Image (tube, rainbow, N blue to C red; front, side, top):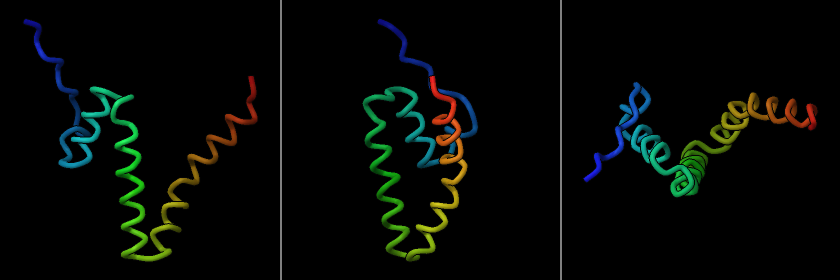
Length: 78
């Protein structure tokens, strides 16, 4: 009988809900990535429902560095 895989170590995995999702993604990334994306999208929809366009605007502000990285990667080419 083989031993079960070791659980990932680190402070990020000890956060109650986020750590549970991170452990699942670390164990089976391709099987759980869509579940994680749907959960994040649902949280965004609920935040917009509760706080209105402020939540959507803050999400856009938080994703600005990601867009900068994408634009830089596009300009690098092959």
